[in-house]
Image (cartoon, helix red, strand yellow):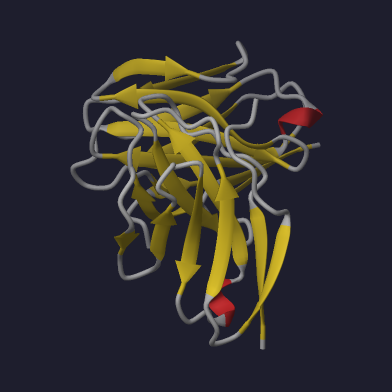
Length: 113
Length: 108
């Protein structure tokens, strides 16, 4: 158990819909990272937040957005969903800003039908 | 532009040491070598990292060559639960970039 929690565990939805994935970092960790893992793309970095502020963007689509709240939990919003958005979405956290030792949550499996 | 090269798959007998190689010939002086593993569809798990000295923790040992162009992750007594994809990552202050890793299978 990494100490990072993600909800929901599974999500099934239809194309064109919008979903929100939630992540609670480890106690004391200020950085939250979101990753997408699909079969053909491997594990891809999407975005990082540190203490409520966006710090870095990776391969995140414009249809996706995220935020980190004052209590440090984070949400990833995915809209206008397409079949290709079906993937595992992982949240990770670390104590600092520099992408060092990251602790990953169990992931949310999103299926778009 | 991959910074690391790993064999796609390896087998190891249960109870033996598993030695996973990684080549990173273009590593810069301020870049660390990180190892993570991912057990079937679970979140990746941090294992160990190092700069130039060998490192050991409760999970594994990391041996980095003197020229820092390659390293080896050693799991001293592999168990069936060590079956996973192992990622070798070179990073400075930028994001973690996961490659395709080595799929390690522990054979009973």
